[in-house]
Each structure stands twice: as structure tokens, then as C-alpha cells.
Length: 381
Ligand SMILES: Nc1ncnc2c1ncn2[C@@H]1O[C@H](COP(=O)(O)OP(=O)(O)OP(=O)(O)O)[C@@H](O)[C@H]1O
View 1 (cartoon, rainbow, N blue to C red):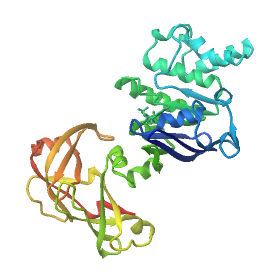
View 2: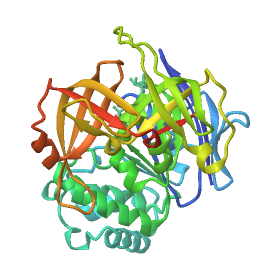
View 3: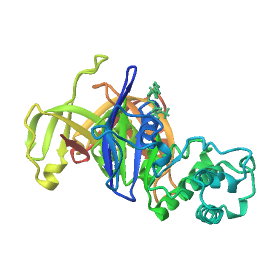
View 4: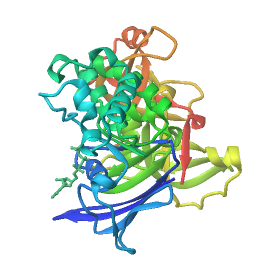
């Protein structure tokens, strides 16, 4: 197991993070630029020293402030793949990969064997004598990974491994990398600001903001129970906060949304306490603050005041309409329609098919009604 606790500060930036990861698991470190993700990798690699904490991998301490243990970077069995790969331009692919092994003064036969293995592992055997400038971005990334793997690391640190690639290559390399990480089964910490990477790679996702861990869990937990607007935006769901003012029955409650900063009138949402309905968890007190999540696919749009069974009806105007590709398993185009609600400051986003958007003739600034059922609004503590 990897057991990490790190504390450091620079001027006004304070980093404070603790987590564990199972051996062989990939952990995604997700956060905006400046959240402190690369600092965590540098601290782990020993390129920077924390002020306090510990780094313990499979019961071996590499840093422990209370026991005064500081193992230097070169003695840590950690492979580090930098964001821009940092390949030596004058060395061939083979020599780039062999570099770390040569630095360890290993016998030539061992260097040849391990470099060969790493080349095969990333399927670059045929390009061994090329220079980095003669490789595509995706191939350069594989050289950087092979260089780390040749050292047989027990922990792999990947800093935004897909960031330097264009969109198309990124898509292809993402799949390749996923396969590779599965095959090598080395404990991996994968830094990214792309939620999609988290979805594909992460056994667990750690979300960082301003040097702190703001949520931790599997992707499903983040999507179903986001604990901040930032996470909800990353995973693409609607997120509201409010107070329970009334219970209609033990699982359905009415939630008062706060008055918005720009003076929007407060309003209410009828929601379901999903955990209570499914797992019988305790009933939150009245006046208790809760979060509410609504999947954008559960929101229906209407041009005129709707009639029907939906308990939640909001009027608003369309802020923007965004094409987001096709839905799973179908070739139908999907659009996300963001609405500024009249009754509240919270925006609401609906995901509908392109065909329905066209049929309704949706355009920005247009007045629209959004509805969703109480059973589609999930409230949780
Ligand atoms: N050695 C240092 N001295 C002073 N400030 C630093 C140092 N290293 C990092 N910082 C600051 O710490 C904060 C976190 O930086 P870090 O590079 O870890 O963020 P990040 O989440 O990896 O962002 P990005 O994705 O842009 O690389 C930033 O505000 C940065 O300016």
C-alpha cells in the first residue's frame, strides 16, 4: 500500500494532503491549474522536501518527518514521467531509455536486456534507433514511459501524460496508456486536469483545490455525490445547495434554495433522499443543509408553461447551447443547454438530443421552461 501525508507551504500557498492507495492501483490526482498536483509529485519523488508528513510504500518509509527519514530522489524506486517528457534530443530512443540504467552503472548486458524489455512493453522496438525529433507526440510519450519503466519502479508518477498531445492523438494514446497501465499493474499516481482521464484510468480519484483534498472516491461517487460546484462542473451534473423545509413523506422533501448573490428570489425544489429510500439512512433534520444533484439528461425543456406530473418547473432563459457529441450506443447528436433560472441564481443544464433542440428551434436568450421529477433530484447530506 502507498500511504502519503504531505504538508508544505510557499508564500501564501498551503498544501496539505493525505491519502492511501492499494498496490497496483491507479490513483488520479485531479484539479485545476495551480491546485498543487505537480507539487505532490515532486514531493513524492523527493525533488522537493515537505515540511511534515510521510511517504510509505509497501511498508518502506521514503520520507518520515517524525522519524527524520529522508531517502534521496535517486534512491527512491519511483518512475517520473514529466509533462513535456524531457527526452534528450541528441540520444536515440534506445539511449534515452537506457540512460537511467547507465547512471546506475549496471552491467551492459542488463542494460541491453531491460531497455529491450521496456521498448517491447511500449511497442517501440522498431523505432529504437530514431531520435526524439523523428517521433510523433504519442511515440515520444511512450519513450518517456519506457524510460521510467526500465528502472522497474514500484511507483509510477505521471504528470499530465496526455497534455502535450493534440486532441486526436490524445484520444488514441489515452486508450493505449490505459491498456499499458493495466498490463504493468504498478502503483500509479496520474496527474490531470481532465475529468475524462479520471473516468478512464482511475481506480480512485482525488480532487484537489488550493492545495487541499476536497473529495476522494471512485468515479461513480463523484458523479452521484459531488461535494462542491467545482466537482459537479467537472463531472457535468447540476448541483444545488439548500435547506430542507418540509417532508412530504419519509423520502421526499422540499428544499429551499438560498437567495442568490445577484438578488434572485429564492425558490424550492422537491427532491428525493435517495440513500434513505435505498439504504434506510437516518432522516436529516429539518433546516439541515443538503446538496441536490440532477442529471442533465433528466431535465425536460418546454417552450410554453408545461402541464404534467413533474414536480419541479423552472422558468429561465437560455445562456448557451453546446454540442457535446453523441450519446452512448447511438449516433444521435447531443447538446447541452444551459439556462439561467428566473427564480434562482443557480444555472441549470439540460442534455437533449440535437434533433429535439432543432425541433424546438432553441436559441440563446430564448425563454424556456425546464422540468424534472422529484425522483430525479437526489438530495444528500
Ligand atoms: N518552489 C515553489 N516556490 C513557490 N511557489 C511554488 C513552488 N512550487 C509551486 N509553487 C506554487 O504552488 C502552487 C501549486 O503549483 P503546482 O505546480 O503544484 O500546481 P498544479 O496543480 O500542478 O498546476 P499545473 O497543472 O498548472 O501544473 C502554485 O501556486 C505555484 O505557484
